[in-house]
Length: 379
Ligand code: ADP
Ligand code: MG
Image (cartoon, rainbow, N blue to C red):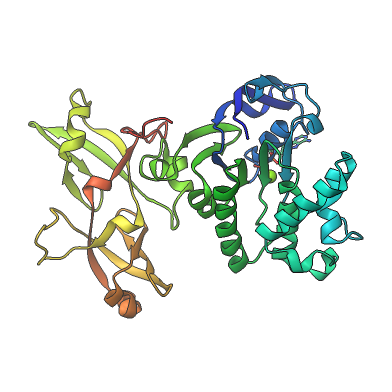
């Protein structure tokens, strides 16, 4: 297994139009790195450049410390698994898995050993003699994985390998991939546009937008300390709420104000606004799980509340997703309290008093979108 490094890698098909813009990433030996971003952000291009299927315009790609920019794909010791599994339809599962080793003239006893081992890991042993058309989508996906595993490559590259599967199979394959990674201890670079896959699979996540790396960190660090509004809204479902607000400093009193509420600046943010030009525009970000109903009787009483009218209630079983209308715009709230979940749909069109956890509040510069207090330690 191996470390993969991208150093200031850029790619353009037409001069001046950068598809990948100055990307630097380090994927450590044995690490599961998820590359996530919207469709068209350049994920496949980046992966194909690592595989050697696409040239790079500037920069360097290193595997195990060696520059591989000019190395042919077959000499990079990388296995790639695509969204369409590209199995050979006329070959059995066994032959599909054995194919790349056969073409490298590996001895048939080693081929047999590796294919049987991979089949065992992936639960494919009873299916080895079947043709792909006699397999389900999930089984085909596992054969594609098996084909990569038997090669014992230094690095695995996955390009949206689960997106053709239905929701249940996707969840199941996610677990299997996690287990497989723990077992193989392989270096994996995994591309997806699905934020749930990114959060659940990655040791680390790299977020890409318009070919520019936005942030690279652990899933939780990115979720809790997104570097900008794009990252904050891309990870998390339902999306984070944004509230257009203003910071006002008046007679040594610092507060945040908008159409719906006025709150004292929480202590932990205060020192950052010593030289504030008052008023200053700010974008407040609050995740749906940090908004809750104001409770008069609560011991740790929140200091503020605001009105919002329940618009749509989606009951998911374990939780409720509630959309509300307020003077500060639409609000998404996630409710997981069992008692409330059961009866929440009775609240449609009712006005609620809401509050949110000030410690979890995020603040962004509305001009640049940057987090004003991003505290995630780079890793
Ligand atoms: P993603 O995998 O994130 O959806 P891609 O890497 O496939 O994104 O594409 C990124 C951008 O590069 C897109 O705008 C796409 O149109 C463009 N692109 C991809 N391949 C080519 C190509 N061969 N020639 C020109 N433009 C391309
Ligand atoms: Mg793609």
